[in-house]
Image 1 (cartoon, rainbow, N blue to C red):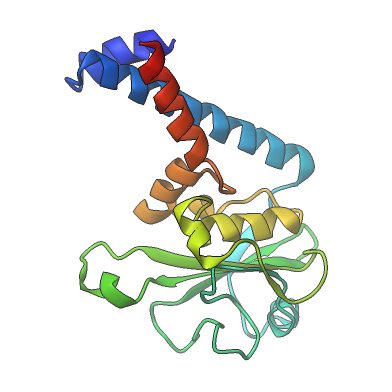
Image 2: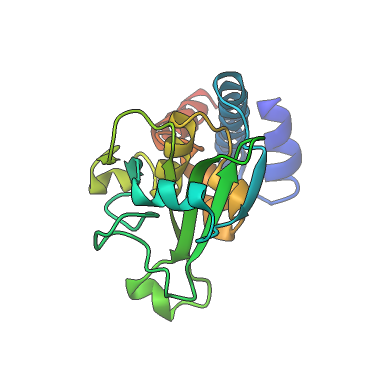
Length: 211
């Protein structure tokens, strides 16, 4: 399958050299298999929310969860709830919050997104920053999943958001809640829950050495 995809797509369709085509075929198929396994794993150990709706400040269940945010801190970035400087500024029109609820209308998680600030503000395609809190997240408060430099290896705020949802018993992912080029790109690169870059590098090197 790897050889066929490399020859017919990466080589014939994209015009890559045979060795590069074999490498990218191996990486791409490995990524597809990884995402498929993650989806299977998440649906075995968690369930999707029954409903997703806009955050409602008049909904007591939404407000209760926002008053006691629990989850993984998205790499020191913003997250829903609380009164710290790291909380999303709900007066900002770029901010959007989604409430994930059960069949009984109980709020199980809140996911927020906003435009990435800093140097990216000058770009026409501004990446999205996301964060989440989950009612059934173990323990209390916001916890670091990995240090800030971990985004080079493990993932971005999107993977941290997904990890919060999974730890809270939900199989939903940010790419499905806030579909955007940046959520799709980071999911392809890091997987849904992070840590896949090393595997892709290994698969590419393996294909190169075996060609």
